[in-house]
Length: 206
Image 1 (cartoon, helix red, strand yellow):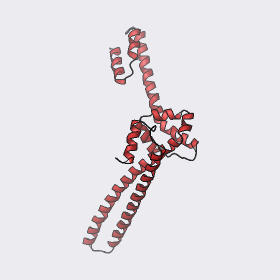
Image 2 (cartoon, rainbow, N blue to C red):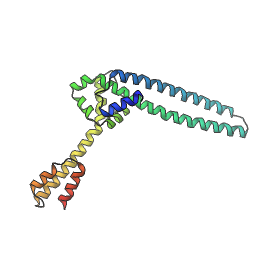
Image 3 (spheres, rainbow, N blue to C red):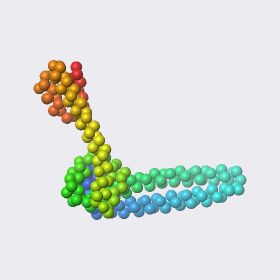
Image 4 (cartoon, helix red, strand yellow):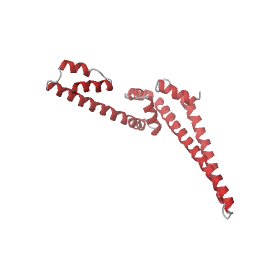
């Protein structure tokens, strides 16, 4: 298992808490090396493609057809390598951002943001930390960047609150109209599972 896989698995099982700065720095160096290598390979293929194109200038039809096939093959290889590059780039950004977060762990705990970070589902945090760029030089800019990580989560919480509020108003309406006993509805509303809530409110609306 590669270091990246170990970091990813550890992160998913226990977000950030068990990761070390040393591991993250090592993985960052490894990914940077991979990015540089793939970048060189893409540039080399691009150069070869241009050379083949130049060979076709003034050539006969058969030669041009043969060169065209080679150029197409090179372009396909370049596209695959570019996809690999993008994957490494996302991994590099994720690891670099995790490294910055770990370095500011104490400060983030002091302002209450650390608890928010460790309570976000790992998959969501991984995606958000792969899509933003954190600046390790200024703590304020790190906080500003991390606030963007929570935007989607806050929206989801607001949406959940709106749904809960609608359910409450519907329940009140049912009780006020005499369709259901207040004690019964209170007992039903104690359930937190969304699927169970939906079944309960279907029963209430009968």
